[in-house]
Length: 305
Ligand SMILES: Cc1cc2nc3c(=O)[nH]c(=O)nc-3n(C[C@H](O)[C@H](O)[C@H](O)COP(=O)(O)OP(=O)(O)OC[C@H]3O[C@@H](n4cnc5c(N)ncnc54)[C@H](O)[C@@H]3O)c2cc1C
Image 1 (cartoon, rainbow, N blue to C red):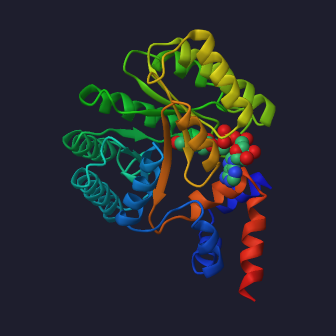
Image 2 (tube, rainbow, N blue to C red):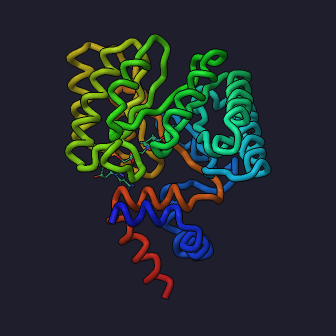
């Protein structure tokens, strides 16, 4: 089921049907606070009231023309300006996808655009993180991260524990000042490059987590998995790692009680807040992670009749 849903996330015909289907939108609302910058800013304010920070993603990926890329960049610039005006830059940064900024059309275009956004983020007093996409883009995305960091060293990167290469990437990136988000990985990857069973992926997450926590960087522990969160807490205690030298991250709408519990215990917690109308692929990956979410969709359909 997981693989089918991830495959459907890249199917344009199913996308057209789903996007034009009002009951789907109601379920999407649980994971995406809205389409506008104001919707994202509203979500940041609500999280901030519970002591939780945000990283905001303008939905959209795999842009195949320069107009779409420019729209993405303009939206991020407007968002950052708005966060500055609202004095929310302590509470929120932005997350970007290289494929939305022109990677795939022209790597130099993606670099120029990533620098424009990193510069705007710095100007208002916040940071940017570059998301991880499917494994065919990992080399290019890490090269982009390295290039952006020459001028903006606080730019965050993302590593996916499911990939066989990731322990080596963790070692290379666990350096002073290096902000690295560790997640399991949301894409359906072949066995030649990735662990596929849930147990192997969790074990790999723990291996990578240990490397990052023992290193000098700033690990961003991105999981909702109770076992991994408990293991991370135990390991943080063992290493006597001070609060503020790492953070927990979760997705908007998923385990909000746990987000508040961790924040109330003094951990830095950051929630990934996606916004925009191009929600389809993001939403399908969330369904794939928890096929029980399909029941929400089913209930929305029934309540329509
Ligand atoms: C802040 C953040 C940023 C991320 N950035 C990236 C990225 O750049 N690239 C990338 O490939 N992946 C990214 N991911 C996604 C990640 O790779 C996983 O696909 C996702 O987090 C699910 O894995 P999990 O560790 O939560 O464990 P899981 O085993 O999937 O989930 C553990 C438990 O969490 C809850 N849960 C998890 N997902 C859902 C859901 N969709 N709906 C309802 N409950 C759920 C359930 O209770 C589940 O039992 C990110 C995740 C987070 C939290």
